[in-house]
Length: 258
Image (cartoon, rainbow, N blue to C red; front, side, top):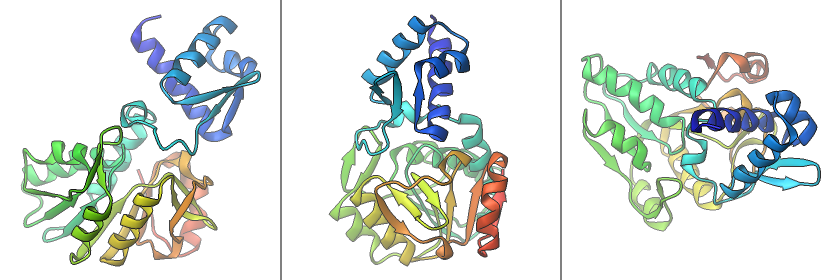
């Protein structure tokens, strides 16, 4: 199996697991149209990479694994992330002071944002981030303030006490954040306490708060809640999530479909 075919099958399985959390070998065979031995090899490889956990007769998604890697999620739902990022960048105005969260969706917003700045559509935008990936995209186009702290190489971000103290005195006009789960009752959730603490500080210091979440995140509740839905100024998601996002619109949260 070539590398591209393997990656495509892994991504398809991860998308299925985002909806079901677990899948049997038989269902995976039907879904991918491959043999049992191919699915078994795929499960072994994905477990080795820390993407799934093999269970009796199938596999389950690792929801509370703090050692997930940026690389393993970077290409999952890639087109949706690009569209969401582009739509979110359109919400930025000249003179904004932004805090851009970490994760694998925000760098796509940075790509679209860089294009707007380079084209002269935006002026006087100040950008803060804790993401090395965001920095790498934007540094060629504009000045970026990188919030330091403890660097987590597998997530490509900074967190911890130093990061928290760095943002306490700052005010942002807009905060664009990611989330591991979004639920009308459960709110916005993440898988680790340091991310939740930093997000709470930035939320308190931001005039507007926008969450970027692809449709697979709806109805998911991770370990730690860091915000309730009503505090949001807007939700940016892909069109596949339109029906689920309607509940948020009814709660008074503007929904921006990508």
